[in-house]
Amino acid sequence: MEYPFLSHHGGTRGVTGSCHQLHLDPHTSLLVDCGLEQGSDAAPGAESAPLGFSIEGIQALIVTHVHLDHVGRIPALLAAGYRGPILCSEPSAKLLPLVLEDAYRLVVSSEPAQVARYLALLESLVTPLPFAQWHNLVEADGLVCRIRLQRAGHLLGSAYVECDVQRTGQDGSSRIVFSGDLGAPNNPLLRPVQPPERADLLVLESTYGDRLHPDRSERQQRLEAAIDRALTDQGTILIPAFSLGRTQELLYELEDILHRKGLLSAEGEITGNDALIWSRLPIILDSPLALRITQAYRELHRFWSDEARQRLSEGRKPLAFEQLLCIDGHAKHQQVVNYLKSTGRPAIVIAGNGMCSGGRIVNYLKAMLGDSRHEVIFVGYQGRGTPGAVIQGSAVGSEYAWVELDGERIEIHAKVMTLGGYSAHADQQGLIRFALGRASAAKQVVLVHGERESKSVLAKALAHRFAQLGNEVSVTVPP
Image (cartoon, rainbow, N blue to C red; front, side, top):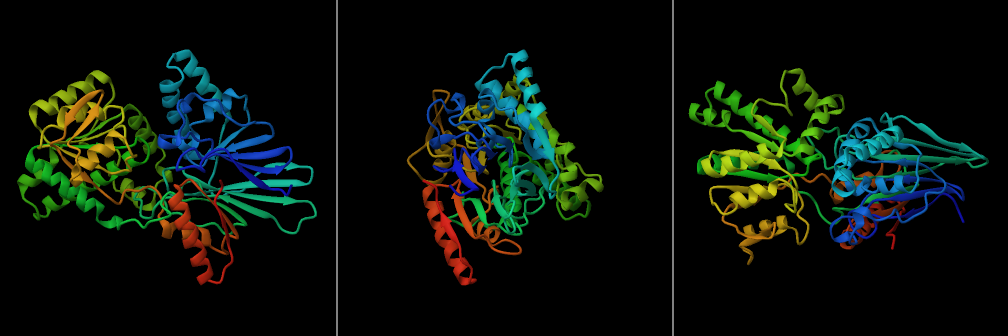
């Protein structure tokens, strides 16, 4: 068998469960991500299932970012006896324990001593690496492997992984690149993606390999218009949002809207009444996990984009502004739900979970979906069959005018809107640009982390674009 070669333990059937093993020789390998299959990709009981592959010879786990579809099987990895390093970026090292603690409490045990033991083990293995610096990982028997993490622009700390493999007597080295999840451009909080210098083998995500994203420049204006409409109707805006990444991006943009409104009122360009209404509008963040992650984002501000750090230097607080109200305890959460339902006071509520299949957003929806004053705004993908998809479908003239939540049939009279431009994944154009690299284009591309149609369309688009530029490429899709 010729080395290095790949085997895949997830991320090949759909858009979740990323887990790829790079075999360097018969006894030595690296694991890139150890994610959980979710939604329609997952078998029943996937959250608590055994690992499903041998850990023998794995020298290190390299984490591209901390979404559960890339790290959710780490508890199973540890249960299988893995005690090697968990390598990741510095921001991911801070975020990973938060995400996995929450998942552990929900799936395995919430018993304090057991959670503490699990976190102590996890944190003893996590090894943060700086971006853009080579790290020697394997040096034995004429084999040298080093890795480098580069910013992927998907969420704070997300990285793609460059593996450089060289053997004694071999001219040059083999460069294997794992994209992880690549971000869309113009994320206000994150620094942009720079394609790799080169890749002999590129393992490339394909989530949106079959489409182009809408222009992101208008999304803030659309969000502002929706809030203006809610203020007029004296209603509450409910935003189901994922705790990690999307919530922080929304808070950043809401702060910017409020800041501009304040500046405009000072210049006399909007009425005093409008400014007064906006100045009293509470932005309610109701998610314990999102609160902890947002606090971590604040502490990790040195990894923000230049624009975001400039705002901090001007004295602004993009993730901790005055009108932001944070709800932690369940009793307070229920008080807020009852208050907003009974008073009709305008507010913006950001609560988990993102697909309305559980979490605190469900209580808000049960209380307010039946009232046309209120509005639900979706800013993320809604998986087929989820309550979020049903509610979203009610906005486009489908037969659905009700949704089942906690076993109750809830009629939908609230307005429903989908706000585009918040995708955290690169589109087809961004994926092709990444594969073309900076100095030289990829020679072989393996497509993972996408539905069958997305992979098929992207494979054709890659072949066409490479041929236009006179480059040869082999594109494969793992079975």
